[in-house]
Length: 282
Image (cartoon, rainbow, N blue to C red):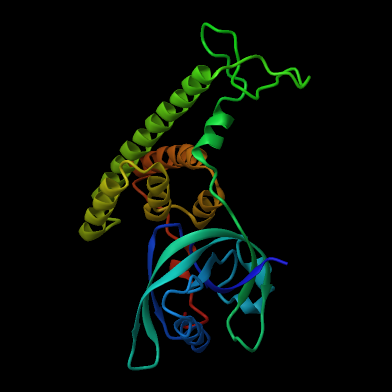
């Protein structure tokens, strides 16, 4: 059995570190907010899980586990403003990623709950080790520690200095990848602005956020995933990727694709939810 957490299905994924404001006025989600507010203010449990809807706009009309994507992100409660009609204006921030194993539908509580497994980010050292797999260090003929291409359980000697060379190369390659994504995203925002697909305020906000995460590869990867006008499928694939390096590499491909579409077709993708008639008030 995994951990049971409250769920809030939405039309698009939430990403770690991304601010998500919500207007909550459906009764079951009012109850969810009230349940969270009943917890001590310092409680680590003041969150719910945001999962993107895979199909349909009324999750309970089909099997919920099939209607939702299997990787989501927690939304941690930051600010709650009660409204005169009994609803709430809330501000949340994306927290931890999780894999959804099952969905629980009940009468008390009336909102969906999910049985989840928490997903860890791959550490930089693990990513470096993955990039170094099969690498022969120039001028030495030696391989990084732990590499066993022959499968005989014996690794060629590799001292700390050689390990540091591998780590330095990995860090440099990540920096180059990060810089490439920054430039592509800057170009992309400019093209979107020229087409009038984004407001001036949104463009300025993206530019400010880009500056704030300039030295944070993981933060940059989540900013691009949330701010680029990608399909839900593309965003979901980025959310499911645990390694920053691989996420940035995927975003490099996606941004190049989107820039080509913008420049050649003068078009940006429109989410299907834009054409849907909502079947619930949330």
